[in-house]
Image 1 (spheres, rainbow, N blue to C red):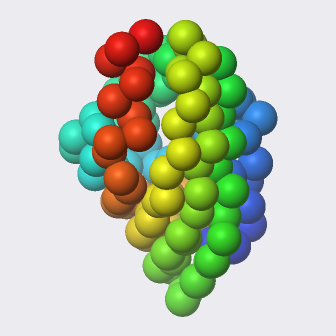
Image 2 (image 1 turned 120 degrees about the vertical axis):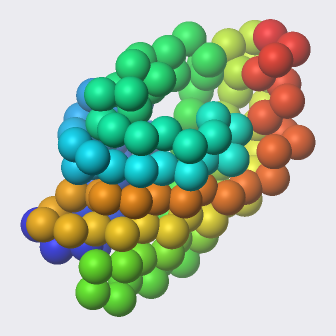
Length: 123
């Protein structure tokens, strides 16, 4: 699977709330630098972390606005629209950088405005 197909599935699975299939897009030895969760190393750790996503959000949508793919590297500018479990709205711009090898995400960096996500701790 090429990088563009991986990205299409990444956002599709996230928007469907299919976090198990979403995690399956990552290599076993993946590394993610996530602005709220910090550094995540290994797909098993990612799976255990993502198991709680359904409890954090009543709804979650991450829509790509600009996608750039250059071989095994990619960058995506997107818009997150979500609601916390308590129903509080979350709107944020995001930028993700990806490294993709053999059809799997090996590295991802997630950058976004953290202020809108403070409602999660108020739920």
